[in-house]
Image (tube, rainbow, N blue to C red; front, side):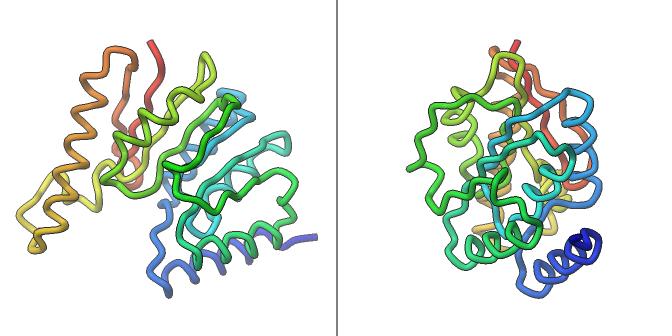
Length: 196
């Protein structure tokens, strides 16, 4: 039997030691509850990193299947190892590709966007066509470590440009007439978007 708690702890330690951004405990707990409450079975994740969130989402219910995309080779290889440790290879399909090169025909109950923040609008536009009729798109890091609210702490020009893109994505969601989005101050900020 896999000792899930130990393996999750090791993944978190690896992420910390190797500077891999993973979702906060509050963020993943909210998503797992959302999956249960809404009977979500098919998930697309944009941004696998080391497989942390896809593993936790898969562990929510044994009928869940996940397709997750990662373009960074080191993170992808780590995710492959982690998914094997949890014996989830049958339920988690990991694609080593740039998300913009991925073409999927199937529909998903949930699209979880947790990749390059500057590309969120493009990810949303690309993968919303794969959303099932009553599906949901959830985006992480809408607060971006508190910097969206308070830009005064930002010294780097690149980071300032990134925060502007996160804000532009917020506006894109707020003004999107096809989706109703709820912004939640959970973890690092979640946007929960549902088709109208």
